Image (cartoon, rainbow, N blue to C red; front, side):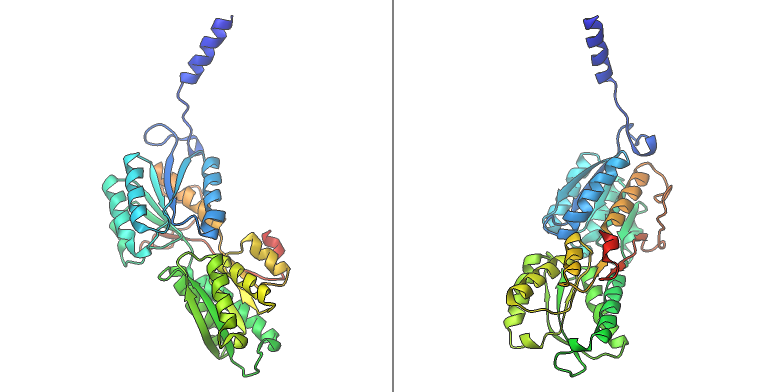
Length: 340
């Protein structure tokens, strides 16, 4: 009887297990494999929000996902794509390091005939998405986050005339930009300040600094330097294009015993705590969970040869951008608890 049981167990172990999304096998009859990357694991938002949700949701959909760190180097990412292609993954989910270098990734995917989902960083070259019929984009409307952040700041500025420290009617601000050339960084920098101009409130930029890593350390170092600069006592507003840099700015302000109105983008959990503690006046939900799920949904459908939005609520914006846009949401002291 023991021998019969042992042989039965061995036989079961040798039977191939076919698992994939919606119970359907991929083209090779096995589990769908997604070859993915994060442009830099040093990014609070990408590594702390999107990476774990990509992994969790892919598992929920019955797909395997391999996520590598491109360490902020487009050349490294290009090599990683070559490795994924050599491993014959079913679909690529790529977070570009350099949005201007999308062509090389798209060409590699096209030559291999592998579907490609670009996510979070949108290709900047005009018409590039039309060069391959199996490439799509998942992200946001870059301008929307800046518009929402700007609207929050304008409303609060009007409500708090005491924030105008020198009573000159002008908003003196400093701005932590993020990665130069990144569509989100560029759009947020323009739109957040434009909201004041649209409201006919004069503004004066005292300083602006960019950081390719959107890092907390950068925010801390720059805020420290600004507070001790000749214009330090004139700063009335701190605008941060992501929460990670905002955290560093808050640390520097607290160390100096200074409070200033400060806003970020991402709605990371730590940001909600800073809002609760009165150290941050608002942020904008950059829905990394939604972006991750849309990326996996499109990737799985593409691997199965289906319409990429099949069985989902996602909508392709148009045939040029081929993009799914995940909306931003304002997070304020009045509603931050909703985002815990």
